[in-house]
Image (cartoon, rainbow, N blue to C red):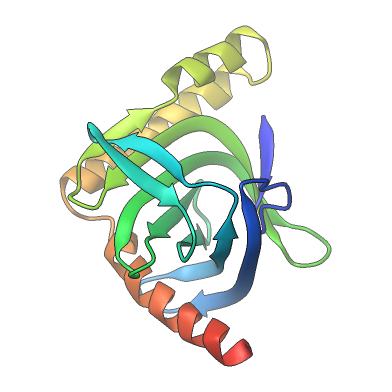
Length: 183
């Protein structure tokens, strides 16, 4: 299982960035949010999203990672240089915690959901999850839990009931303003 940190300390693709964190206690979102604004990227990163090639990292792009309280997933909303949503990326995770410096982290359970800006939904990395089980990196209960959580989220997405996606745009605006003031 991979432990991933919100501040992405080993992000070699990004040469220069700014980061801000905040805690939210609102009806639409209770948890922590981390915004990374990419000033300069070594090179753009293009991925396939819903059958289309989409840039997710480049100069001026931002990644907002949301750590909802008492949940087993983390949502990363990716914004382009015009502050438009590119995609949402949901990581199913076993544990969420904080470093001694207050940086959120999560233990990634491999299974992920990608939602494109036009709401095409994809469940990905099932092969990574199966391989982790086969290699005894995770237990059968972790494997089953990952699918249970993914299926719950897919059900919410089909019903358009995962309000965190749309609300991520509001959180992005709030944190981006805070980041600009912080300059």
